[in-house]
Image 1 (cartoon, rainbow, N blue to C red):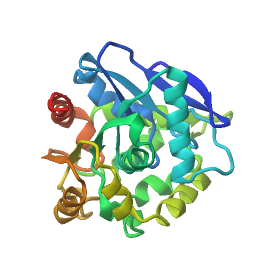
Image 2: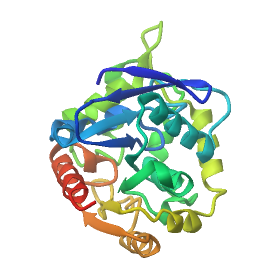
Image 3: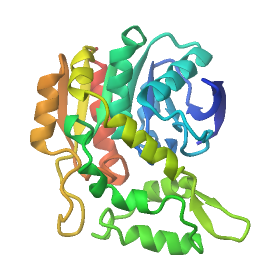
Length: 285
């Protein structure tokens, strides 16, 4: 994905605007993720239906990484600032995991800027400290130099996310974008570990039932109810009961369950299901 930048809210954000005449769809990645997480949706044709914009949130990817400023309000101001720079008054806002939670926050606090929400595997129970253990492999790698890309790749494939042998070039594209090469040849994630822990602290302070209830725009919740790992040893990030509770809390929500698990659902053979669900939803709003 080509890198574009915009100076907003005191920092430089990296993003990719695929252009086109379709409805603007702005997608935000997961907690420790970057805009290349959506490569599978691009590959399966999403850009043929929308003007897709994907962004690296502050502290991640190729965006600036200030020492502070990681509240949900700060992130929301970044996204609204990006919309202003692009001259877009209203978008369909969406994202995966943390990006989905951000979508509801922006919809609740800037309702006039949001036409609808597309939320991929996020829900009320995601805003709980117990989720930290489920995403521990993503957190443990942050800030740690690794001898080489090959060593990192073998390590990531051994995590529960991929220990069933599943792998796809979408995943490799994402992780290559995530890693930077240091002067000594080692590699390290571009994500600021300090930023991520600040984000989680701020996120867990909020009343998410109230925020989600205030997001009254049409919403699509795309959910993977499947456990993670070769033997299903890690429970789904969002349980079926948690998804149902979230749907009940939302004023206007469509629900779609898809294949894959929380990490793989937007890559490989699973990505087409997510793209199809988004396109079908947009036809209804």
